[in-house]
Image (cartoon, rainbow, N blue to C red; front, side, top):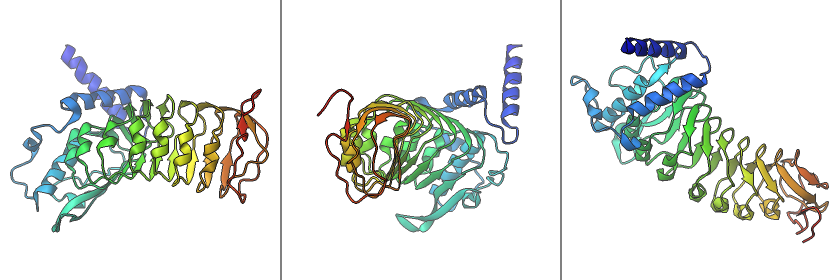
Length: 340
């Protein structure tokens, strides 16, 4: 009787997830996350028996496409709803013809094809990421934004040594900042916004050679690490989280920074003068925090096209966003009742 109840429960949840283009409830997202945990090997690495499911009569042009087939079939089995039927043609050994799968010549062997990129953006698929995706060793681009994937990013993704762009935004991923990011040497573009990640940012994140970093609309908290000044990013967005404390003065070292958006957090204290000394910034938004102090009428920012300090506890007025000088006096932001 208990087994029958489990089957009925599974059928009910599966049926609700399979409905057309319906946002996942918290219960459904939790269900998918639990299903993933049940399938992941210890440590989240590749299962030892991943070859077992391949039909012996299937022929592949090379072993790498065989591995890709195993990975993609495992992924398809981990999808519980595909309302747009994006993966309907994920059948058979010719993975290069699968929708959303793109092949190129291997970097180390121009005579063979490999899966080089995955693009399932906007497919509205509900499911999770299986460990077998770590078999896609040649993938440089992995885009799955605007779906309903849940759970965590498996540790097996550390096998994707060529991964250059990783976009899992607008899904239902959970847990702490995905540790796999630290073991992706080729990564330059990271977008994990609009998920349910939480906890603190690891200091080593800003030591990676990234160009763009989107962390907004999650549940991150704690202080911004002092290592932020080590980052080479040109775009950094951490808006709509729960970050607190001061902006580290080391931010002034970010010479490549063009766009910085820290709005709608719990950041506070005085706005560090170093923030206004980043000469290449064109977008600067630290609105809707708890910054306090006095802004000098004489501070100037060069090249800024969009600029907002709104909804803080700052007093004083600033020049128009575009000015001829980056100079910022030491008293540009001084706490009330105190002089520097």
